Image (tube, rainbow, N blue to C red; front, side, top):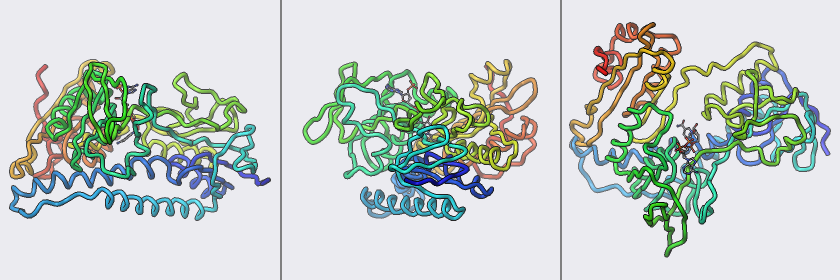
Length: 451
Ligand code: NDP
């Protein structure tokens, strides 16, 4: 039975929890972090980091083909899943140790185990109890799979990275970030991929033109995209699986990936022993300073809903620590948060979609450009890039930037700084481009689209 007393006890060592713990400890607070699974949370272990490594792996598939037009010839390369998977495991273990060192380096205690809140100042882990002035819930989210016959046969993003054997035939269900990214990954690695989405057009919430161009380019890259498709059941079939859709189609697969959203991970936390309130959708209700309805308990990151993105959780963790342990007024600015879908070609986006901008500002001007990237004039790859700028007519401010194409994430990250700084279309026009790049298109769009 431990009687240790802390200034801050963090539940969950993911992006938000670790950042908050490190910052608070560096401000002199006595901090403990409890984690039941892996240090670094979803992002490091089963999210952003391994995903990006697999995206890199998948890009070689196309790059070897592209190289022929530039004079490179040779015997075909062979992809070995076990090598990628095990190299990835090694890198993630290294990152787990880095996280451990980051926390112990600032004097935070790491407690392995599942934490349960007993009262607003007491947490139990593995039978020991710990007291703290403040508790921070940063337990993140967990993949959601709807219940239907055979749903237990599906895997999620938690398992897909570590499959024992490479799925030569993969069915992916969902039309959001995760489904679309994994469709690109496994397509690039050489699997035959079918992506099923229940609605008319996937990537709901993104700019409509981006969604349409993405559907066209992703289909050209080899993913079998099927919209208006609902899964009725999954059953075992021979050595694999059979996916039966509501409209009577049967699809044979080696694996079925469900990427149908995530839910906050709150089970067993003991919230019933507190006055922490939940939204109807299940996330924890917090105010601008991340305080729950229980005065000693705060929450950051995916567990509170909002934008489920690592950099947002990091910003929240940092703002929380500054506010509580400096104290400094520290608010997170949620406007113009850029994001990317690492599909192929990549989507990069910041600010308002055209539809949102019309609702928000009334009159807007839209500039757009579609072109064959220079590289593919020789590679022979049939891929086109698409870029779009949305300008508030009244103020001339650029309020939305969207891109589908190589390096879109890198390009839009840079442009998002301009948008946060309030750049106008005149600022974009007065900026000299870097030639020859795709990004220069954003500073050379002269004529608004005629609607
Ligand atoms: P999303 O919310 O992005 O997408 C969920 C998809 O599943 C939607 O297409 C949704 O359809 C569909 N869906 C939901 N319920 C069902 C159902 N019962 N049957 C069939 N389809 C269903 O979630 P993801 O799981 O892709 O990702 C979770 C979050 O993680 C993202 O929102 C994002 O914030 C974050 N993320 C960010 C990444 C990045 O920054 N690159 C990468 C990966 C994840 P509909 O649109 O019709 O509701």
